[in-house]
Image 1: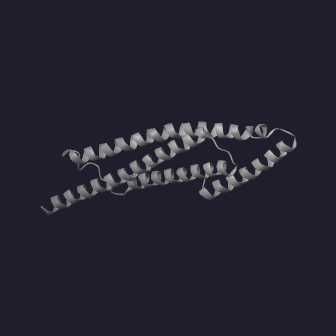
Image 2 (image 1 turned 135 degrees about the vertical axis):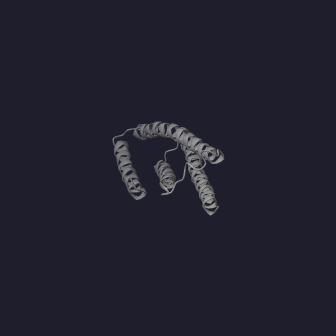
Image 3 (image 1 turned 120 degrees about the horizontal axis):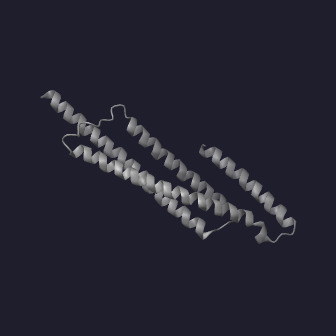
Length: 167
């Protein structure tokens, strides 16, 4: 889902929420009762964020293991010539992963903005948003580091191959 379609959905959700809240208040529901569906929506979003945080931490750990493995391949004389990303498939995959993470970050900021525009404040939601942003930032840095390590490894392998060919 693109960022513009997410923003459009958020605007529709905000408009529907305001309309429903006005309707509930007109039915003489206390304001606190009218806000209950928003509390439930926030609670559900917090549960979703908890799952995303766990998965992103695992992804970050995998990226760090890949980084260490690529560096280890470069240090071992027997395997340093084994792995060469000739068609840049690994780099393209890692770049698309990093871009997807940045897109997820933008979507989460949009959802946070939606809750703020609705006037809903929650310490629990803010905590989870902050944690998610930190984990996403760490994942993006790890993906960028893997990209850099891949590029360094490929450059070193190509240099060795050129030196062997020249000799």
